[in-house]
Image 1 (tube, rainbow, N blue to C red):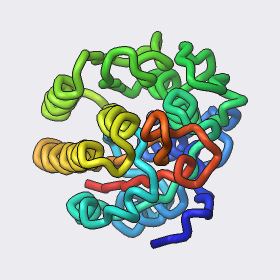
Image 2: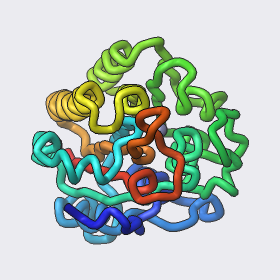
Image 3: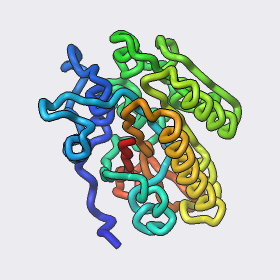
Image 4: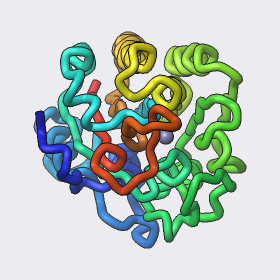
Length: 276
Ligand SMILES: [Zn+2]
């Protein structure tokens, strides 16, 4: 097992510029972007022909799957479980999230490209973000975006009021069903799907509890099933698909699982990216 005392170095703020680069929309907003695209992912995209010799992206669809609270250390301890996911993944990025590693702060940074002090959510609270986000920028350059999220959860709350299509439901099953419908309908350039089930169980039954790991398995299965659906339905597109959690977690006394500390278990997460 890897040393659990080392922090990852690739910041979560690179996700937004990477998505915008792939969708060919990475202009005129240098001020909002702090650190450029994910280099390893860009290199892989070039090798696979998803970026041409002039450095221009050929990708025209992005699907972001956002499971909650899956840390790098969980991947390292349950590698066998991740096999089906790794089989359909061309690049893994070990991501450092932002502090405090709690859901609205981290997704705030993922989709603004900004550090918490710049996007304004500094603790566990879910105000509507007042800064420019990917959900402002992409519609402003004519891209169609869908957010699919369970009611009351961070992504449903902090990105309200944008010119995107919101699909907010009480259950994860309905969210995932809607994501499938959206893939088949093929109307959006970017689809974001949030699944908070592992986080929910991890808090109650510890990160490695049987019930929690069962939910982790569901997240992996969901990604693999959506991959198959995209492969089948988006043949005319070039797609960048991501398994992209917000932060990790650790075992604690009460609640039995938690996150929010400046420790590698909470701050290190792991992303898997697929080019289809
Ligand atoms: Zn979270």
